[in-house]
Amino acid sequence: MRTLTHRSPGRCRARAAAALAAALAFSACTGALFKSHEPPRTVYLLTVTPSAAAAGAPIPADLTILRARVRPGLDTTLIAVLYPDRRLDRFAAARWSAPLDEVMQDLAVQAFRVDAQAPNVHADISAFGTGYWLEIDVADFQAEYAAPRSAGDSGAPTVHVHLVARLGAAGDRRVLGQFDADIHEPSADNRLTAIVEAYNRAASAALGKIVAETGQTLSRQ
Image (cartoon, rainbow, N blue to C red; front, top):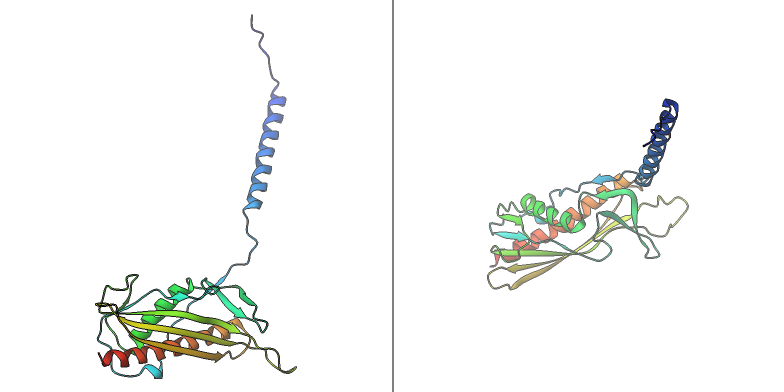
């Protein structure tokens, strides 16, 4: 005959409370493991401003802007800074709106639409889908700090944007021209907002030069 064991209500309540406390403790520990203490990043969006260098006749050609090729170390969403000892670093808690190859491709499309009134320019991953293609190498895209010159030096960096572009014909894949734009734009002061504005001016000036030279080359075709 099986003997029935009677549990007192007090003992059951005690065991249930202990189980609940253990579950809550485990939840608190695992929650702490996945909780990030990194400060949220501020996202900065660059936008092309009209460039005097690109002023000229509209470009009617069908032009594809390829995804940019970015120098190693700059191929990230983070905003690069270069110190006098050639140490490459990043500004804390700040980033671009996308990886730099995507940002540069978008800026190039903007530049042709703003500066050259080019209605048939677009971004594509295919090099040979339209009449002409443009590919940009990003050689430099960083804020550069110089060694302090005096006690009163503000210490603001200079933004260095160096782009090398190749223009080609999609039909026979010929390279029609290569354009170099190397821009140094001083930041007004050492605040990140001023530095980003210097980035915006430098990128706009470099792309304006490429747009102008692209238009001159295509006008001869």
